[in-house]
Length: 210
Image 1 (tube, one colour):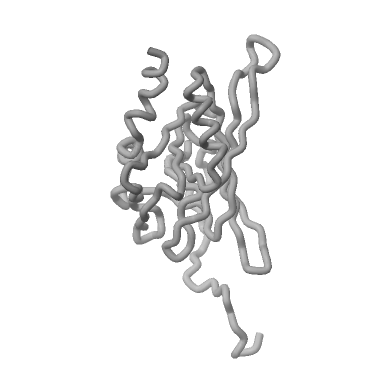
Image 2: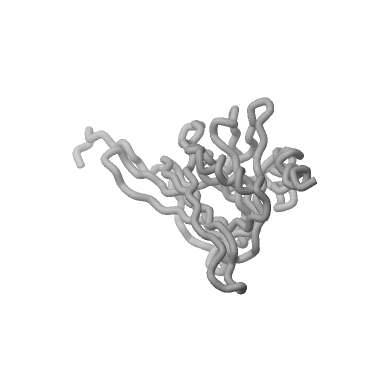
């Protein structure tokens, strides 16, 4: 390459990929709970020195949604493709939702109508990951879209559920999240996210049933 050739994608700052035993033997899958929001609800975010997510700030009156399912049913995906304008990274989360009220179905309809969703999930390997939220240079990502499929099955023993698939592309891989502190524990992350979930979102199904 000529000395004066333009290098738009230098690898300066990249590190050696020498995994330790924790990385080589870590568990797959994600936990039974995820947290969902829309990029349009966000005011800003901050990063820790290593580039992981440190804080998110929601606009006034906005809150996250918590979704609980079963362990060993949910997963994340990531990867990249090359385009004429550089690499794009896939963000994907698959969550199995078990519904029992009409209000929960209405929530699925609202999520299906959004095109800028983000999620937080706890990996079984022990870290939290944010999909569809962080883009390069401190920008907000475009978010993900959600599709759903499923039903009752045919036999009494079949799973009666909806598979929610969140998918999008960003200019950055999904980031780890250590919320409130670079050394935040799982309990710290959960407490941080739960504080952003509305009481209405948790209590509405019970109130509707009453």
